[in-house]
Length: 162
Image 1 (cartoon, rainbow, N blue to C red):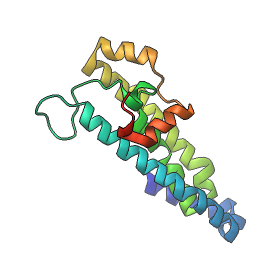
Image 2: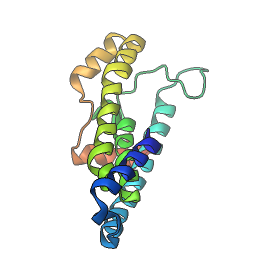
Image 3: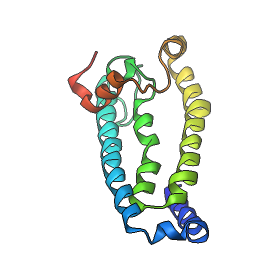
């Protein structure tokens, strides 16, 4: 999806945004935004993955599986903290590449597609897996949360389990 998005973005740039392709200042600016955003994406993915691996497993189960609903730590303020971080992956790639079309068109479409997949595929799977407990959790905790305290939990990872 990302590779295709980059190709489409670069094609659209060549067709419609030629001035930006050759603008060094634009590329420096997007790179300076894209690299910290990529760091955020990787940090959040690492922290949430480790937290889920430690808190979401009971017994001897395959490595990447979970069998316990996690509602503490960063999962107490949003249901999909790892996906929240990963939502910004296409945008960070687009900014690093410096493609206006990828930034303004392709990346937002990829982000919407990811939200669609979470809402209509992953959430029903979680309801099947965890039943009424997940339905109750879903009614109390938003899918994503931009509150600074919640973002702080994503960044801190294990240091804040509550």
